[in-house]
Length: 102
Image 1 (cartoon, rainbow, N blue to C red):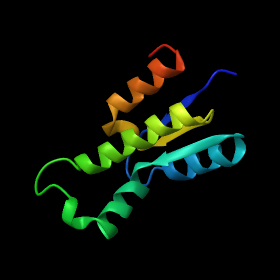
Image 2: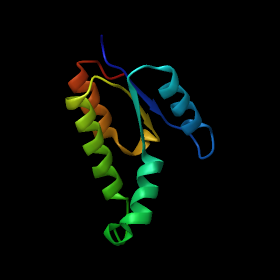
Image 3: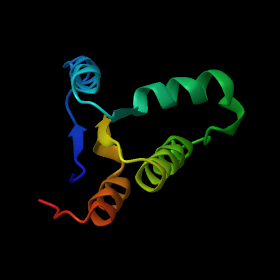
C-alpha cells in the first residue's frame, strides 16, 4: 500500500483540526501531527526553551522529529495539521514515501 500525506492549511478557526481529526478517525493506521498541539506542549512545559525572537524553531524541530520517526518506524498515513511552516518536513515525506511533489 502506498503511503499518503495529507496536509491541512488554512486560516485560524477554519476547521483544520476538526477535519484532520475526522480523517484520523476514518482512515485506519493514520496519525495526525498537529503543530498547534506541539506549540501548546512547548509553551506550557518548555517555555524557557522558546526563541526570544522569530519563528518557533523548537516547534519546527519537534515536527521534523515526529515526521522522521513516523516515516521510518511506522506504516501510517500522515495527516499534518497546520503544515504551512514545515516545507522541509513535507518534502521529506514525499521523498521517503517515493511520491511526487505537486
